[in-house]
Image (cartoon, rainbow, N blue to C red; front, side):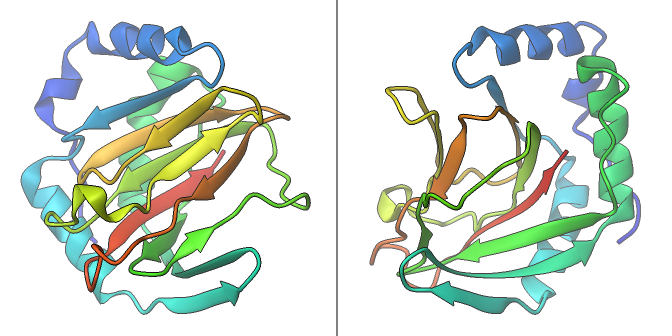
Length: 191
């Protein structure tokens, strides 16, 4: 994939401060969702790459069912690292390899006792079908086990960043029959 360009709206000098403030305003589970993150042509190329990727089913009936693969996307990593470093500091560095997760009807994941996430951040780029139904489920959910949850519905061309601590767990809500043959696709890295 060739160069990946951010939406110019995110290049304004004050944007970084606004993003950092909004991120940490969510005290229980710091997070932010930034819509229309990539320029349209960059997003279209990324979406084509995701759609062409060969995804393999991953199934454990008690814990999860979805399809996934790994994609090397160095230009995306470079662009996102350059964008995030001034906001979150020099410790943010994305690798070239992204995990692509794809959900459609009957796909899900659950929280299980063996789930352990390292402290850090989940960086997610939503590359979902534009016509993925709002009522189809497949939301990403982060929780601390109490009343604190962050629900992330499908939203194409969105960057999501969630801070992970020792209490944070995540799961993917069941993709119901409204999903049919539509796909919720997202790229994720834990840094």
